[in-house]
Length: 394
Ligand code: NZQ
Ligand code: ZN
Image 1 (cartoon, rainbow, N blue to C red):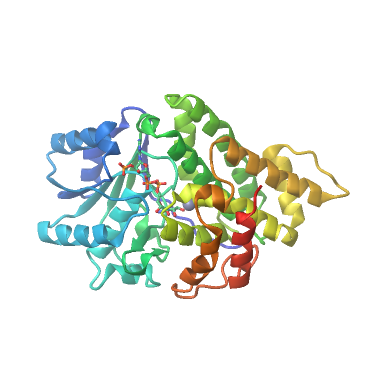
Image 2 (cartoon, rainbow, N blue to C red):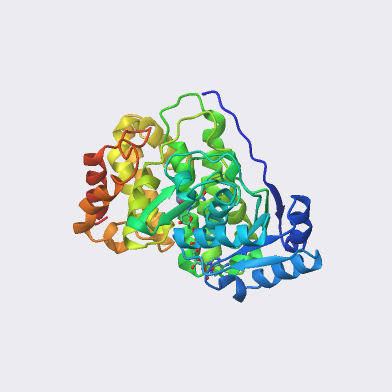
């Protein structure tokens, strides 16, 4: 195990009715003038917006609104939000929605006190300060409600880049009422499950030895997601299945499962190029890539892949031929993703194979584009080969 520091300062108010605390929580964390950030209208339809507004009114907290945040959120809304906050003296961001609303609120929050273009903070520079961000979560997926990350697409060149990771980005509180997620369409529910699973896999496939505690946390969490997602899809109003997914999404990405080990993140790096170019949902892009990445890198540590197959999917261990067990684990994961309605090839995702070179070239816009990944270092030829593998029928 490697040395680590771990700070997860977010205060969680989890469960039915907890949204009534929102006003008091804003006050507790210093908010006196709030910017409410949300997306294209789902939160108005499922009551989350009305609940947040009435909680703010009851606490007598003035607020302004920034609506219309798109999935794969764009820089235009961030600039708009920074201007609005500076003009109105806003001192607190409240995101109501999923990862896109939260990531936009985070970008605004670091942008307001920064003396320069907020995009610097997504191009390699570390943020030193942030306005506090609170979250009312309506989609179990990204874990942004407690993560140190935010991902924004800059309109110029469609560059979908993440911030320089820092605890400054972690929200001060997250209100998590699983009922809000009952209105999610099946596809978004499945995308969320695929994303949280990927957040665990990116940590699980590591070159670091002696990480049994976090291995077991990862394995248990993955099994819970594998069980809860089909339940939520079969019964969208099943509060308990929604609750399991909501808490799993947070645990998958606040880094509890990732401490003390090198993390990979190759699938996420490649997926961001796909969603930048084709606008796909992040979780669907990950589902289409992950089986191909696994197949491509499996030989680096067949034992770890066999461990995944045995412990997560209950595959029998073939001691003479561990690669058979390893491949069985990949096949089971692929079948599971397909069973919840996720694409498992680029074709199913709607990403044309002829655009693969463009995805590799687009990656080169980033500072230090290659290599990425720690389980296996991925150079441009590897990225192209993995995408080609992902384009094959499976
Ligand atoms: O825009 P509205 O109308 O609100 O609709 C949204 C949107 O269309 C809808 N939705 C949200 N809650 C709903 C609902 N529909 C019905 N009922 C509800 N309760 O769902 C759609 C997708 O929302 P979005 O916020 O875009 O999804 P998600 O939470 O998956 O966020 C994806 C973004 O987060 C980034 C992704 O790359 C992507 O840009 N990520 C952020 C991370 C982080 N900050 O830590 C980590 C992730 O790896 C990821 O990269
Ligand atoms: Zn993700």
